[in-house]
Structure formats: C-alpha cells, structure tokens
Length: 189
Image (cartoon, rainbow, N blue to C red; front, side):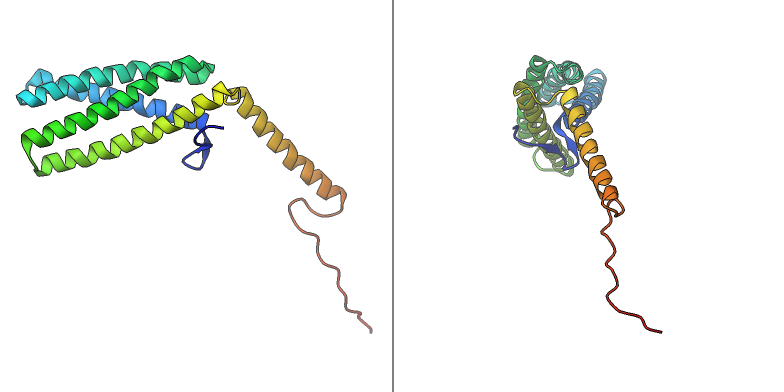
C-alpha cells in the first residue's frame, strides 16, 4: 500500500494524481507566462533577473513533466511518474531559494511578505501532490493502481451492495431499512 490511500479524503490516489498533474500543468503555464513577461518588459532587479531565469527553467521542466505524468496516469506507464517527481522536488527547492534570495535583496516589505505566503502555500500544495503521486506510483509498482483495478473495485462494491439489497428483499424487509417491530399489545373489542 502507498503512503496515502485517498486524495483529500474523497477520491483515490489515481484520480488525485491526475488532478495534481493538471494543477501543476496550469501552474507552470501561468508561471512561464508571468516570468517571461517580466523578463521581456524589464521588471526586475539584478537578483530578480536570476530568480526569473531560475523560475522559467524550473517551470518549463515542470510543464513538460506534467504532460508526461498525465500520459503516464492515463496509460498506466509507471516510468513516466519519475520525471515529474524529480521536477516537483526541483520546483520546491527553487521556490525556497528564490524566496530566500528575494528576502535577502529586498528586505521585508508588504510585497515580499505576500510573495512569501503565496509561495509557502504553493510549496505545501506541491509537497502534498508529490505524496499523492508517490502513493500512486507505489500502487502501480505493486500491481494495484491501474484504471482496471479501480473499475473492478467499484464494480465489486456495487455488486456487494446490490446483493445485500436482494438478500434483504428475500427476507421480507425493504433494502436498507430495518424490519418494523410487530405489535405486542392485544386489542379487545
């Protein structure tokens, strides 16, 4: 069994991995667009320029590996999970380095505090996503986490509840409801 069995307590880790892959794909698109625009229009300091270049490279790699992860999840190809896991670790570390560099160069201002909070939240989401994808990776390596596996599990669960309902109907009660108690009082007229 993987580290986690569900994602956000509501879906399996395969579905959660797909959601995280889409999230990192969107995040990397937004970050690439923003950082390239900042470089093109010259909104940076010397330290800021280095940070922007680090982000462009990091999120460019994350974009490519997110596409690979989506393909790996859909086609159950376990080897395609590894590049994404390495790139998320790289992204979290680069976020940490950039935030420290910005704090060092710009000091504490409202901008750096907001920037720090946004990237701490993003980093936490990325680490949780890494745990979800790692759990799915472990499930696939153990031969469990495929689409067919989850489909069978759902069908088995539905068949068991259907069988339970048929058994209750055969015994005379309504499915899902307890049988009504019989009256014990005698009525004389």
